[in-house]
Image (tube, rainbow, N blue to C red; front, side, top):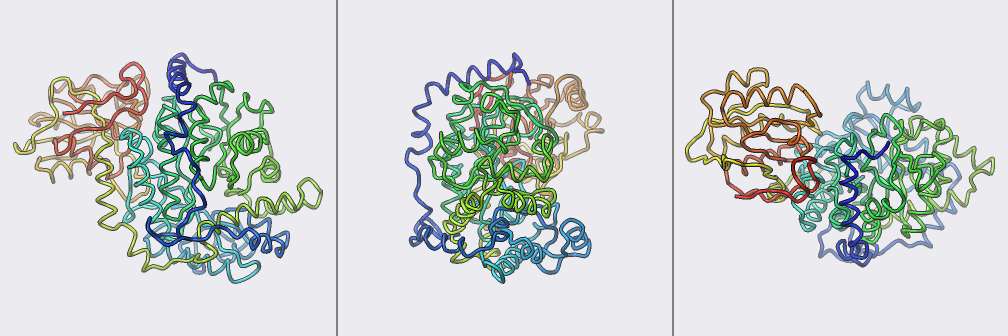
Length: 606
């Protein structure tokens, strides 16, 4: 994909900032690597010391494993069902069709799995008690036979736009919202809360933080999942979140190496090509990953992208030895676990078949093979590659030892399980919920307020109309955003009503203002642009609230005020309501430029 002119200026600005920051990234992110995490899972910062991995013991475990058990430790698979042993009939049938077993416990036993990844669509993530019981059941299955090695249970709980676990768990601001706050302390606190709740659910690896630097407003897969467009700022926040997750006993996973922030293709459905030069990569994409490594990150996830300047072979980074081993291992000095992005994604399957992909990933230097589309085929293909001499057993053992060291570092050999009672005591506590609101208070960005419409004084009990886009919640448990915003404005003293977009213009007269939620407005004419224009034409002041990408502001008619929230979850809608009413002054600053409208760092206050 050629670099468009609108992005060249963004790249140039980012490169200029990075050039002066190259020697300062370590200082911004914390210069010294952390040692092995000193605390057992779920303990606070004053918890007693936890011994690091006993490598001699772990090597003895590896030596006592069969080849099939060793290979199994490298796989992290999905599985259907809310229970390890008693899934719903439909989930049991799905497991039977895909894996030849009916239950998650049977799957773990058959393939000697190293991990399971939880998804909401696989019916793994419901109430906290259910998740904790699923985790406990899976650990019992792992410890019941074979090498008796605990599982590493994982999920994508980035917060913001990507979250697998919903209410009553605490839902925190996502990456770009934290980028708008600019506070490493808030980023670390957010990750620590998230990790404490994940650990209470038995989940000890989170596929976060996102270390991609988002410089392309049209990026279809990263966007607000990134902290921003400035590599130095992203590096500081990535390092803060790594420390936050791991201080609470959960392995952080920096992703997507070597950087997915300037791609026009979604690697879930195609194979993106990154056109940065090596010099631009070093200045723009590398710093956050270097900061993560220096912060002691447990794992790094690869990207299914082709990066010709780093490897001209045409292989995606996940399968590239020059990128995984040559750059991540040797240049950055990363000695932890390298996990592939999901192997069922189109980006890694276009050049090679599903039997070759896991073998090539291991040859490249990866350790964990995440969610292959056909687990049986993938497992057999790795065993066959060893039998044929393409992979050596020593190479397999190298990755197994890294995986076991990570499990030991997170305390899984000491206390792998959890309980429903522990989940009840930790997940969604009043303290955590209050902290989420406090963090979100610094994220909302006031982009425009030319006539001083905001703040709207709730003491006058103004009538407000709320309408616009109603995207589905990332977790299925919050929203819809317009209704939440109206509810929160009413709680603050306004008389706010949410109405569908279709009738909003007719309902607008007689209101003090109309707040319209927009969601990823495309360039050119669109139904959302037409809605905002229709509302502006009523003469009622319009407040545009971009509930995902802040780039919406450049694609809409001028409004009486413009806000960016970076997410449409309830915590961000509450924060926006407080800004609208003046309960808090807006403090967020754009972590990305809005081309043609606002520079990075822009933001107004009262």
